[in-house]
Length: 262
Ligand SMILES: Nc1nc2c(c(=O)[nH]1)N[C@H]1C(S)=C(S)[C@@H](COP(=O)(O)O)O[C@H]1N2
Ligand SMILES: [Mo]
Image 1: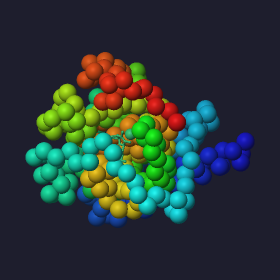
Image 2: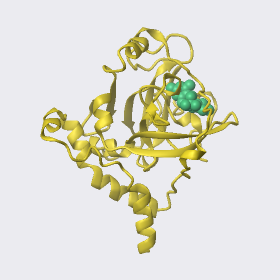
Image 3: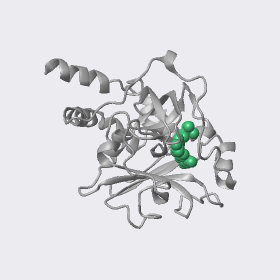
């Protein structure tokens, strides 16, 4: 049991601590929400241990030499539109990731704030329902760490990701829901999985536009369509009915399974 526990601890314990000790100067510029996220590291680690003991598996992780030379980009390759293209021109300095819904502390985080948070880097295989796979390295902040700090309310069940791209015409404006806007959702338990990331880097480089810049979700134990790109808003809720087609995702509304486990 001890070795099992410590093996698990080693698996989930690979958060980079680089940001953990802040200089006095940095501390002054840290927002309250960023401080909250740093304070939630221990709780998040304990929660992961419980999740893994309860039988939740880690997805397989690979070696740097396994990284695919070509990683196909799929679905939207560039959301386009005035809003998104302005963000591209500005280097995404004004991009905000909103976390709202059934949380005690709603947040709007900038990329600079997100990049300062404890991060995790993992090399995993992406499996698309269309029949191709690719191995890539992803770096980001664990979603569960942010949710822990946001304080998920009792009774919440789902985490919904709203994206900037619209697959049927007009690009989405300001992350508002509209027909054709890409969105996805996962269960809270999968949101707290240690390998579920809000990713901002791929293969050691800033996330390219084709792969979801500036932020995308990585959820490693489900099919590729669950890993939402161009994420602007993370909404915590107890129901999926009332959102677009009500089935929990752009592709789910068009017939795909909501739980896409692999
Ligand atoms: N916002 C958004 N996210 C998305 C998609 C999309 O079209 N828009 N396509 C999905 C599908 S089907 C796959 S396989 C992966 C592709 O990710 P990649 O472009 O990094 O390969 O993104 C998923 N997330
Ligand atoms: Mo896919």
